[in-house]
Image 1 (spheres, rainbow, N blue to C red):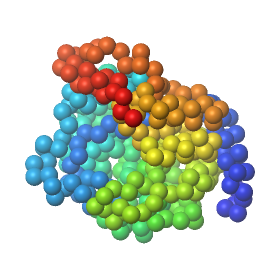
Image 2: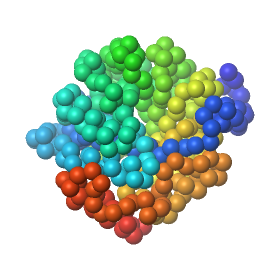
Image 3: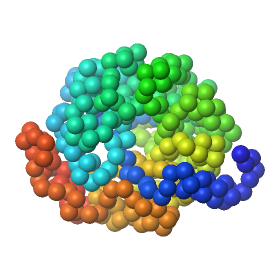
Image 4: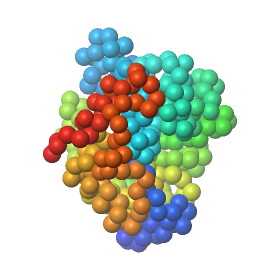
Length: 329
């Protein structure tokens, strides 16, 4: 591996060549499907849900209608988007409820789902509806993690991932860049991936939410983000890397792809669809020399304003299509 003193552009060039050799030129569009806006822990310093916990009097009312969730999965299938994972705060749904949702989504999309629903000791309850388990490591520095995510023990996350491996599930971790870590901390991420045999790493850039301690912080620089991704790619040629960026940072996409990303995420799909921003995503992928799986602009892929699965989903499908066809910008 090249040292941190290596020219960043040499790192990116090498990472790009390695990615093309091992993964080909296809880039996926990934979408996290949220189950609820409630989290029983609710104390991660960067998280939007930490600002909502005290405002939600009845956690059950923060749960999404499951028909809405299934309609979103159906729309992802129509647009050829991957479901990045099912995500929900702690104690928003029971294990059996999550299993049922995952089973139905697999029936809709034809593919098992990843979970990012918190630390659990009930992984044995899941079966082929689950493709993999995601551990929310979040910070590329264990000391900062303890301060930023006080209720999510790294030991518990690690034990869960090791159990997932024993049960035959794939393993993923999430890392948010911009929480106070430094480039030196990439070594910790690399060691963690190696120690726990991680199959997939999902990087995000900080999205400074109002009412959090990070509200006035900036997002990480694009070349910093690219160097982190490049170093992980060069260490792990076979690993799957997903990179998230925000609508105000779409220019990151091209360089993150060249640095080793297999997929991109963190977009408001239905708000951006068919707009100049959706087109920009496709252009970033094109000019990085890649092919895109899925679409951000092809309105024919939206399909009919009724569900192919169940009439119970019709009103939600209609709403998603209507949102996608609005002239929003």
